[in-house]
Length: 309
Image 1 (tube, one colour):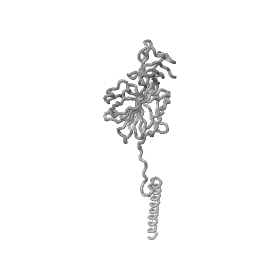
Image 2 (cartoon, one colour):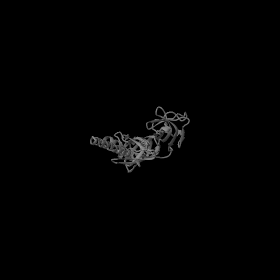
Image 3 (cartoon, helix red, strand yellow):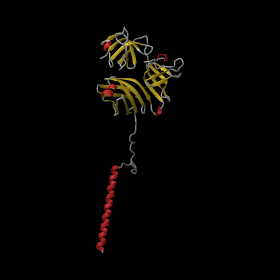
Image 4 (cartoon, helix red, strand yellow):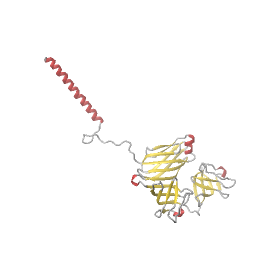
């Protein structure tokens, strides 16, 4: 009886020791895998996953050697932000979206077959949304229009940078209700709108403008200020860029050749001189420098067209 009882006690003791060891082992693993707070009695907080910071930049790439090639030839193009991990692919329609873009000065680097170009954007705000149209030709990137919404703190504030669309002006400066298009955005003015670098009367189709104002419910922008880069119409003006695809009309024989550089129409006549090229040699995608006089409708009457290589 004593020996039988003793055996039972040994077995019970062995089982108890095994349970203690297992508990100790489990506690050790928990201590290694679950961080604790300084007090040692609760798990440490971890950063929320998927948190969104920085700005969002979306846009459309246009240009003879870029967007059309992406769409028709299957060329791969991408855009990245210098100094950060933000990057995106330009799709077949030329669209792209970059998220978590650091605030401040931003340099967008576009790369692809035959493309290696950089575009700088100043003053990008944290949590802002920036929408741009950029024209790219090889190593050159040109901002055609831009508008910004500066985040939750300035929910209705907007900035717009681009060219006044030809034929889009309505209203009048005298009545303080001038209205025009910049890209796809309607801009309206009132008696409180401040005009800088150019008077209200100097704003016309083809003018380069920077708008700051308030986004309206219909998507338009009521301008608080209009900063316009407008040349004197009586002086020779200069235009640089590439001839837009499908924009060539008229004929060299009749001295009526016309085309667009970016969004600006260029007209020629019998007095127009052609340097390093001939009238008949000009084609879509040609890089040109045009000198002439800006007309009331925003177009250029060219006195000289020079081919740039």
